[in-house]
Length: 232
Image (cartoon, rainbow, N blue to C red; front, side, top):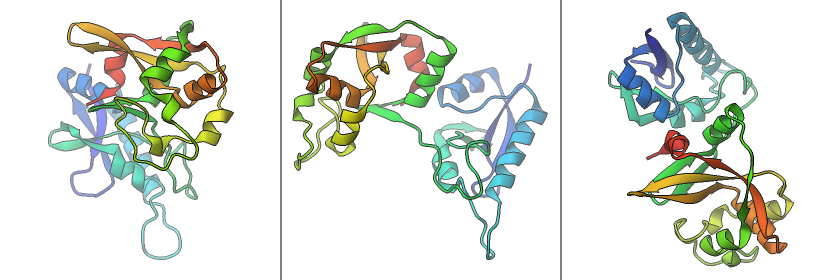
């Protein structure tokens, strides 16, 4: 069965086109969070919808691109189909309107050179329900150096490998987080070893650490699921 995806248009900037993909390309498209269709008509209609939506006009001669940022950031050079960049739908016509200029945010967690797509992780968990497992707060607080996070911290940020980036920390948000919402822990292969990595819930972990809690509920991703959400 032939499958299809969306890539950047051959000549029109910020527009997409439906193209067929080989089995090998399909795996690469999945890895880079592209969309896959089992019917050309579906893919072509999706491309038309996205392009029509992108071409909406308001007053004046210039096109209005509600998803212009999404298109620009939504094309990845790390995956090309017949020389054209893969389209990653950070927003779609069903999640934005003519008046909307802010694309749906893709949550990401960066660890060294690795980037993990948290939205994709949440989709996997929703599609494959699993029980939560308690994870120790003091241990993660030590590894991520949560004691260094302060609302009045004015120093330099530090490498996420050794602790969270201070620029992305918000004390008020942290203390308002829902501690009943499970954090997400990925199982990552380091050579022959498999280790745990907290990829979602640093603010909740800080909140729990501040309150002196021992554990938080956590969803765990398998090694294979982690590889599926990893962008490197």
